[in-house]
Length: 153
Image (cartoon, rainbow, N blue to C red; front, side, top):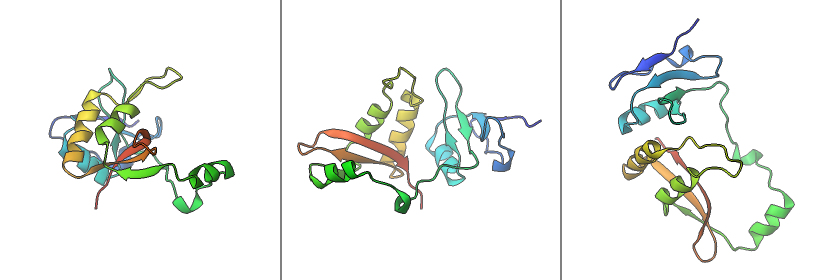
């Protein structure tokens, strides 16, 4: 039976092959959300995902979800909406707002895993040039939707 490694402030991640099969990909617990740790994690395909009051849980599931743009299906109704040219894309124009909106409770009442510590950590990564946001804005520049992520290399 595999055990989960508890990370200290300076601990390194265990090899990804030590991740649990159930729950799929749980690799380690604890440690802080420092920029150094987050970058080390993302470089190895590891990411934090937890809900308060849990400690930070580090994951590397197998298989991973991957989106392939050339396989994306856009419905006819969405194509029609997009042709109206009433939207524009922006990059890194509202990073803090996108994170804040993503952290809001969902309509179904379920919680969110994006807490204040996560927002602070990713905001630091953004200031360092590693975290980015993509925003969809309306004609007046109001935020309609967005996403954030980490870019390496």
